[in-house]
Image (cartoon, rainbow, N blue to C red; front, side, top):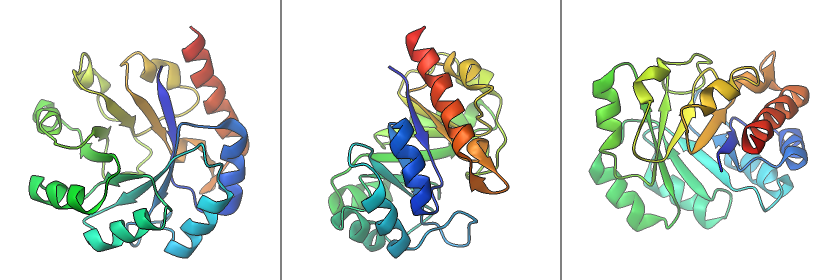
Length: 202
């Protein structure tokens, strides 16, 4: 059954929205200098408000492994998502430091990018238009018949969720597509959740 993730939570109210629709994952961004970046303290408050049945994913760009380890040990995040072109050695050291699933994101422009993603040693790969949060999609024809579980991100909205599902991703990952004026929009979140439910029921 296809899963979905609401990424870029910024406040406790966002957690309350997700408690209603119950996505499979919730994402919080720890990469510095991003519009949706949260502090550890804010992330803790969000995690405490978020229903325990919803795993939280921490999003990082070339972060110190010690920072990720602290967030995992405090049980603020239950998965790690990497967006900084981290190499195989980094993944090995991260696996020694934390015992949680790892998602590695890749910017997909052409078939070579997809081939590189397929070689990742992460538990899951995430395929995106850019480094994350661009609100634009890449050429989805590149990922037809992909042979490993993947998160699909970039330009997703309630309106194109059904089309995206035809690619048979493991998980749809939406952020800006459920926002209005830079903030999470409860009506759009509900619309996305309803679209996913229709897909699941088809």
